[in-house]
Image (cartoon, rainbow, N blue to C red; front, side):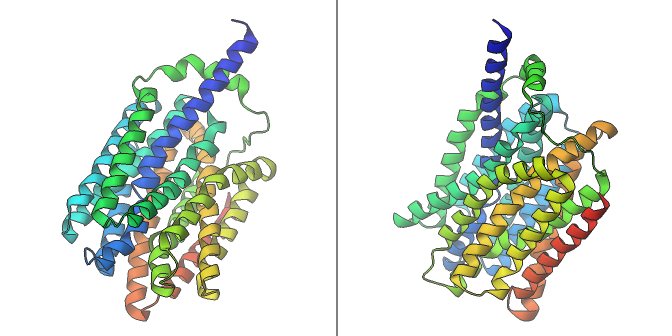
Length: 388
């Protein structure tokens, strides 16, 4: 086989690997973490959960995410394929089990376990593709999987609702869909040696304009934690806010807009990253995201909520697409698993967000103060980015 054929074969393998890793995030993040946001209003209407119970379930999920990030700190790239399989199968099981539960305590516990699998999916898929496979320029496709999962799960819920299914049936459909996707992606992760065979080809095919700037690690970790706090209030409560304020507007469609904004945004922010570099692109991303989070407070209308979904959905995975490859480059100097540390900081931010929102709601009976607080966190992250 000549050199040109070898490179073309490596490129086809690269894209296939990126799609398979993306499916891990579609399941573990899009379905496992964020589908709850769209089902939550239905569970409240059915009396399965109260607003307080939903906040506890959300915080438990983020606590599980934090625990998963802690467990993943010692995870190394050559073992990542096993954890990709574990996270997809574990997520599918958690989704299906939620169809059987009516106790708030049990739902909170399962959401905690699902959060653990979500963190494992984020770290394992990132390590497998970016480090083990050496496919760092596949980051946009990898992280677009989260947005695809959000949009796909939201529209599956719309279909389920059209057939008159309650929240239990919705969870069962999501669990089955996650299992099918997990089985489709599984062949990529059955062995751990594929990256070693193609790494040289990947180096040859990596675009020359990929940003190679090495930024300071700890400011990046702090920014990432604040970004987790900043977006999560919108990501947790947006459909509930929409259903309360505008009963005629289907909240699942608004949530689908959130996901549809996230998927292509990974490519847009990646291109901006190539042109502007890590520092400038991250600042722009955080400022736009802060505006999206605060928008429903300023523009309390259906259009305001839809635009908020588009802006926050179109930036929060952009933050990941910019920050995680930057962390990977910084980690090569220190030798630490900075991807897991970043995920840990993000998890901390996501735990604080719903707890803060719940406390502020108890005082004011509105989410306006929580949204403004989240926007302030993103502005602070922008200021810290000046230290990168």
